[in-house]
Every structure is written in C-alpha cells, then in structure tokens.
Length: 223
Image (cartoon, rainbow, N blue to C red; front, top):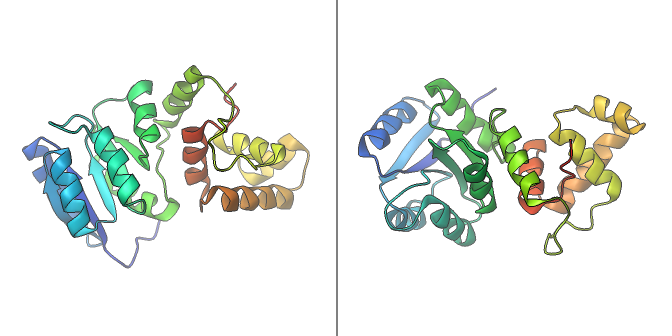
C-alpha cells in the first residue's frame, strides 16, 4: 500500500498516560503520520479536536467523565469528516457494535502489533472506514443479535433489492467476479450495482459501505 503524500494528523484520546506516550512515539516515527495532540478524557478530546482539526482520532472506550462512545457521538455530530477509530482492549460483539453505532469509522484492538496499527491508519484514510478481519465477524454477530431488516430512518432505503444482495456478498468477502457467479450476472453488472449503491450511501469504498450498512441494519444478516 502506498503511503499518502500528506501527513495524517492524529489526536490520541486515552486515560492511560503511558499508553498515550508510547503510541505517540510509535506514530511520530512514521514520516507520513503526525500526532498533533494527546488527551486523557472526552471533554479535552472534544475541545482539542475543534482547535487542532485532526484527520483521525484514536479513541479509547473507557475514559473518566464522557466515555469514548459518547465522545465519538458528539464529535461526529460536530465534525463528521474527522475519522474516529476506537482503540480498545474490549474485543466482544457488544463493544464493537456499540462503537460503530456511535459513529466510529473503525475499531482496532489494543493487541494489534505496532506495524499492523500503523498500516490500519493508512488503510482508514484510503478506504474511509476500517474493519479488521478479526473484528468483522463479531460486528456481524452483534448486528444479527439485534435482528435484521432495514429501519425506516435509514437514508439509503432507496437501494434496490439487487444492490442490497450485492452488498451482502461484499460483506461475505467475495470479489466482483465471484459475486457475479453467485447472482448470475456479469462482473460489469456487479460493478455498476456497487457504484450505484456507493453513490446512494455516500461512501467511496467496499469497506466503508459494509460499515455503514451494518450501522444502519441494511444488510441481510443470515448466514
């Protein structure tokens, strides 16, 4: 993956000072990443985000005062273009689902190796969202536990049945050619359906489409 030419500005929000300092050292060692701030609670995160205007906020879930999830909701409502990635020790379905429902754009376990975390930040900027392979099955199980169906408030409810079917195949990890075989259409037709779905949903990548569709309950969630 080619790194971006512009530095990615990062704000770290975590109540453990040693972790913040260690993460800052790791990220600042990358020529294309720049840690512009480091805070220990949600209130400071909201204030610093407004002043520093980061590209990415790395957010812990458990912080004093406002939780990382509440902070994420408020931050995304005020600064929707800022990418929020939850970085947490929690790897269960509930916490992962709650993070994306709060508006997070990605979820990284704190157990990630350093190199993988750095790569994930680049991938987030490229794809617009981040769902590691280890996280996606848990996210899907969490959404499934809520029940399927498309809620009426979903802004992309004008997706066609075929577009939803294509997205569901994308969720399973299939590429366009494989999806075409599954649905009995050409690869070009699959690509057209995806492009139409992306436009309606306001996304620019397969990963971002999966995240948004799971957030809103649009995908068929059965195996």
